[in-house]
Image (cartoon, rainbow, N blue to C red; front, side, top):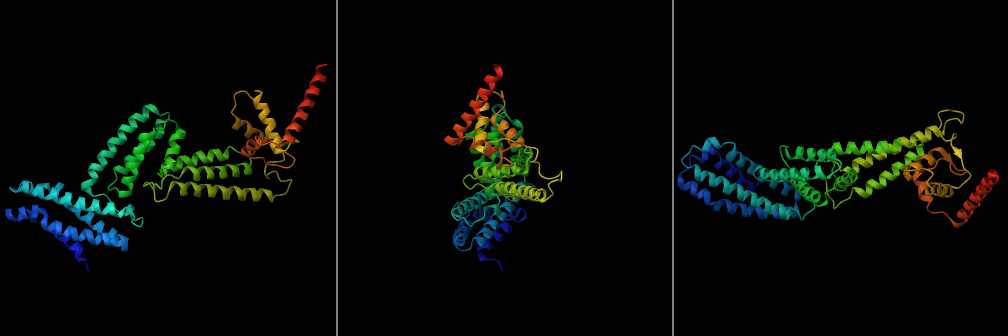
Length: 389
């Protein structure tokens, strides 16, 4: 049986049906326009929903959904059924009735939403904006997006990425309905974008990750970038370290004030971690498989061909830093240089060296290791002097 608190909404829907409205007398229309009965019923409804927000959030959501549904029906009567009442001699009064009713229903809903936002058990992804409110919200957000895109297209070095962001937001704005959570997300997102104004690809990607821009097209872009970073490493253990590094990076980047993207049912963080977990499992299985093969099997993990240097990993890294410092490698960046040495050399104790580990340990060399390196360099100098003579 339907709650009596909702009966007034059914009565309202019936009373405001255009065919019924045009048949009312002028006095009845004026009484309806005054909205006194409507306001009394709205106060009772408001109090009931406020109680439900704290006691039974699901019932509160159900009643608020009914209010939104009835508001949309009245809006349809007003806008789409205009031909059914606009020819009436009472059309001016009817216009006022529709406008006042829609405004009253929207004010009631706004009040309830404002109160409900204090309760984290209310799921606003289930509540859609009314048609009455949606038109003005979409217009405002589209205007803001257009102005921002025009500014960023000039200032940003990656207009294609900005275009992708703009297209995803437009797609959401052009959807048949927008939820409250999506509206708040877009509002916050565009305001933050206006303040931050990222100019490089890296800045844009970080901005999107921080704000859970969980659009499928953006996830695919990140997945491609991650795949390329992992596959650049020849050694499987080096690939595994890249996966671990990416996991740490993702966990640090994809956290920003609890924002939840409205483009997919799952957060960007969960999508990326799921992908990296899958890559980790695949690489580990390959390592186990190749490690169990006979030593004379040409398919075993490629480590035997690496040249051995008689240094520890920290000392080897320190030696590489010395070579970089004297300019032997020209304009190559340090990361590329360390990757090369990690892929082509090994130490007596470490068959597979991670580039990140090699570079990191090169900065943390004990004094005894430094003295050992001095001795090695002195021997090189003596050999060089003998060769000159």
